[in-house]
Length: 270
Figure 1: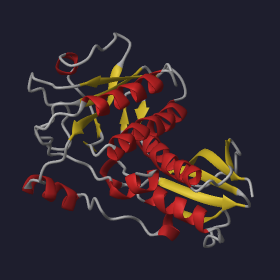
Figure 2: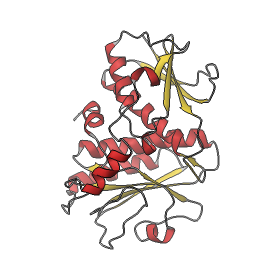
Figure 3: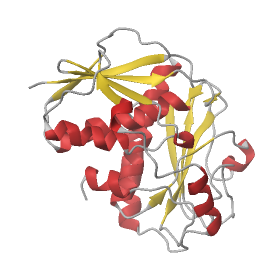
């Protein structure tokens, strides 16, 4: 399955079968987590397979039947914006890899009971739990789950012209179909309460990524809004790679835009 297929097909899974994950798939995920842990020392990822203690982590999502989890810890002592943005990209790389293996996941962010989490993984004294995802085979969606998806309008996305414009505010002037498809994959990104906080502005060959200015979703030293923009950024850049579009990631520092926070830019090498 391609990254495009994984983005299109992936939805949050809150109800899981008892079917165990095959050893071959476990090893793929273990190898990926090892790679993620080498990427940035501000984060630490741990997998907990075959949870027999009936520990159900998180207060969001009405999770049922989960026996496996990916748990992410962090020690944020620097640039909260940059770290949160980076984290979104790293965690989403795991989410889409799991999707490609036929496994369901669900982003869960919030305050967790350290004792409860410690039943599954080791938490160091200078860390806090940032995000948890259950992991496993999807079961039939329960009525409670359907009601939640309806309440947050989980499948609804903002209009393309709302999230992507030229830097002068006019409608996007892009004719490259592969870039347009990559922007569509950005539009499909998940976000906390489906807020969809990413805004993208084209300036010549640059695509500037901004975040709405919100502290509503801050947890300790972690900003979920910037995290979500990181998810969208990952969708866009991985889709560009899929279509073999040559690009580079830069800090372009474009103009300030009221009520938006600049995050990062992608320069297309045409």
